[in-house]
Image (cartoon, rainbow, N blue to C red; front, side, top):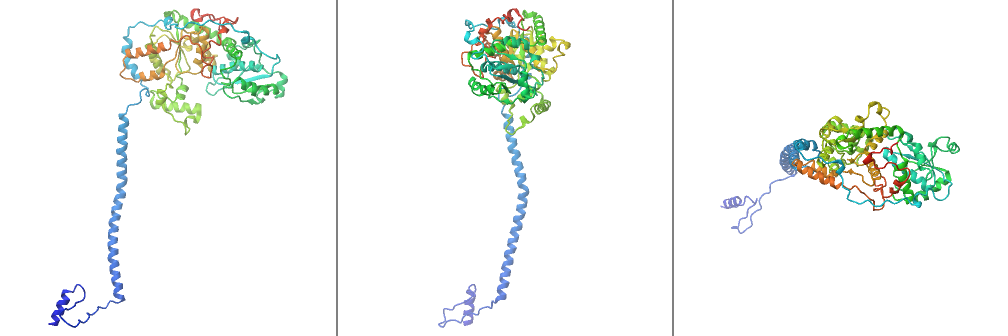
Length: 579
């Protein structure tokens, strides 16, 4: 009975490992403990460890296999996502149209509008009535004695002034005029200016090759003494080599006080001073008697040398004869679409990969690594929008036709070698068949001695443009800058110059929906905006407003001088001014 009870107790409590019997008054004997020695514990730990390690190995292998799969799949996910993003972004870019005016589409617009242009029966504008003189000419004043009295103070010169004129034809012209003014200011003897050879223009000409030295010296006599070379005694001090004279570097746009305070003491001490470079080294605002010297140098003393003047006069006469359909009057265009100009502008046209390769090569050859520097950001579209891209012959032709000129208008094209001339000039010739240039007006024999001399060739262009009825500038620079001022001086303030609003023009020439009527209306408004033939400088002079581009009223009194013989070349084409 006890056994059964005990067995029951054990069986019912088997899960606890012991049993207690409540029916017995005496406590039951303790159950027998099983033997669990060190060996058992080691086995148990080994077994548990084995099971745990097995489980960990299992999970590790599973994780490893998962990781390998993820490792293989992650790049796929990454590149898939990247392609999706790029594709979406590219689609967005394709869907966003370019900024108006940033893309060169002029050939496309021209092809679209050409039938309308041909069928336009509107009468052509007469060159004599292009401009309306809306402003009254103010009364011309004679030069006062204070202005034209020549050197003031001591008659003993303070020393010799040597300058080196750098740049192209008209930048050198600016340096010469400033040198005359500084010599007068310092009471110095001016040595005939030297010309620096420039890697872009590549013209080795000297002063006497471009200008008439005798006329220059004679005209300035009484105001500034000019000599061809330094005295022998002074040359011996520098081993008969002018390059041994130390260079003084004057600051740009220096006022008269700078020359009197910084340069004059050195000149007095050394007896000679050599300033290089000399472009833009004198401020525009100077005393009136010094300003007069600039006027005298630019508009009277600087006359082209005899070989240049003779051929230039002949070209003007030939251009007048070829303009019989417009009573001997013609339009001149200064077109800056030469290879180096297109390359320097960093603008993109319609030449594709070939154009890019050619322009990269020209930039590297002419300016080396300038356009590849880290801080250099080239944005062709922005350049075009801001009006910094040279106008193509096609764009100039469309503009002029829209303004009212037509195929009976005689045009003289002042330019260097046009980039891809045959292709780019074809549309302009299509619109204006009476197109001439120095190459077509002169024979090869006449131009033979000018070839390879960019300044001499530019002097021919300058003269033919000077005597044109209307002058069109397309890019800016020293050439139109000086020409506009020279024309104002010769024509009593009437420059008759068309300076296009390029920002507006590029916007119109990208509009594929524009009609010829709308384009023409805009061009006539642009022409009227240029109808400012009388320009009087009312503000103070600055480096942006000079007597070279706005010659009046500072240089007006010069027209009454005995040397002034040009008369009104626009009316009678009196060319005594040239020779």
